[in-house]
Image 1 (tube, rainbow, N blue to C red):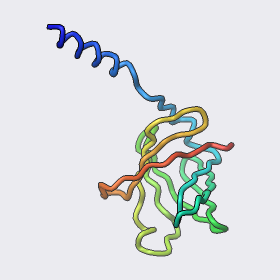
Image 2: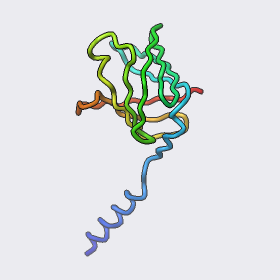
Image 3: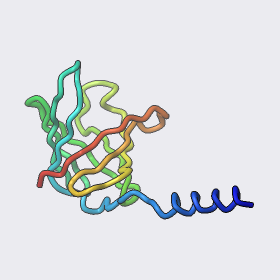
Length: 123
């Protein structure tokens, strides 16, 4: 009986904790994303509104369309792909938000392989 009560207590504590997900404030604005490319930390800056995202990376500009699935998930499609990989849309899901940052996971639509990253809103 004690074991059951302990399990119920632990389960109730975990059910009370849910990560912050205020995704609405990240639908538009100017953002920064840092990642490692060939062992070097690189930064990408992008501006997003409800339907478009303009990305600046290493002196190059890319424009993508955005289709929001819900408040925390969207599909991004490159409008001017240069190869087959860029033609495939990406599914992006915001997992948590905190202050001016959000953690997300992303992958090509239809592909089970997912990666994670963190974005900072700078404006």
